[in-house]
Image 1 (cartoon, rainbow over the protein chains, first blue to last red):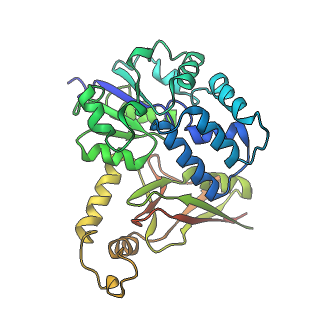
Image 2: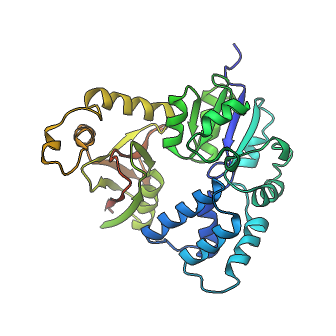
Length: 204
Length: 138
């Protein structure tokens, strides 16, 4: 019997790429464990950017302030570095281009195109996720009504699509809307999960 | 030797799972022990620590199961003082427990193939939470 799931729809941040707060923090303060209040502030700034409430420039200005970077050019440098250095998470290009993975792949991005598209190209994923087929969270006015909007737009087909996300409250929300979901931990675990969904051969 | 770490988790409010397995594994590496155990402990009364497969369906099923036993909209004597209204989360925590201990063998966690250490937070409000990882052994 063929697998019921015929499409994987992956969230970009935290699944294909590092989350935006992680990416920004690793560029601005590598190896530093930010205090909780700053972590929360960075999460909120990234959420505003993902949902299109703030432009990328504003996120960078907020991020450098949160990370304690005082240089006047720091925000501009972060903007450029996110465009030129952001890279897919380890193992994801190999997994997503595995010829044994025969289901359709779609991407929902919480990154703006100016950071996402170069990162996909660097990781060899531009062919897998053509720019014209990428959905952006910002175009759906944020996460609150995201699943309804993605279903309406046909990005997610309940019963046939597996939503892959690193954020467990959102996978729970998807399941409660009748959308199959998998929690992303890393490429190795996702490969194992996809095997259990019948989308890849089960590894030994 | 005993090595203790504190980690801060930022919750969003509501039923939320955090996989802390890699943090526990890293603490064992930092401690440098070969044999012993690692304790993962949550210092709160509306959150728990469990060992389970970190699978999206299981998280929803666990929340549903706890909601049947202690519904969030239920009436609780805990609410009588009018300070907070999270009686269901205290019951859930009491049922699941606030710590797990995992054996360490040859410098790694002795977990089964699908076993992961999860913190389950049930507090309705967004909070800053503390988890303790304590490694004991030699």
